[in-house]
Image 1 (cartoon, helix red, strand yellow):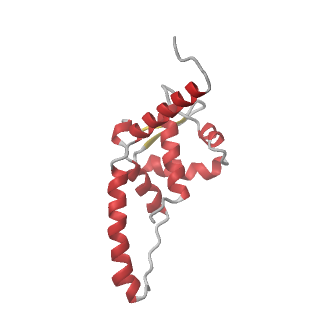
Image 2 (image 1 turned 30 degrees about the vertical axis):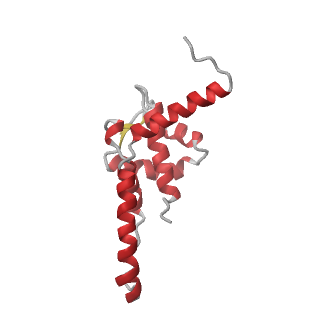
Image 3 (image 1 turned 90 degrees about the vertical axis):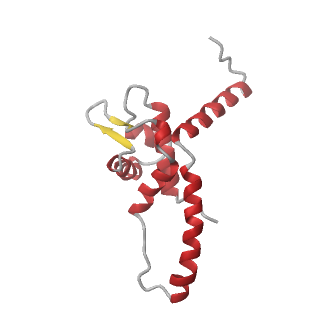
Length: 147
């Protein structure tokens, strides 16, 4: 069954976190790492790859951090995954013929279908799901959301 790598899941979570928390000010890498219970050194290479790909924008300075480079609805999960997976892609140059001629083409077709499904999921959609979950959790805990 196709499965996203932990690195891809982390990258998706980081982009959604930035989308949810960058309200006029960039999100610091330290804050992101703390929320995801990771050492910043694990997160920085992922964030930098996303900056180089134009998904995030890096802001320098004492109040620096990361912002989305464009609208949430214009960033797909598939794009985030492509950025992260491109950095760690391996190829088998000396694959046996059965792998090269039979297995890899079949798996490649399945991967294209999986990627098409991920292309339909945007950061905007994930932010809406996060907001709904927060609202449901707050209602379940008896928090009053009225102003």
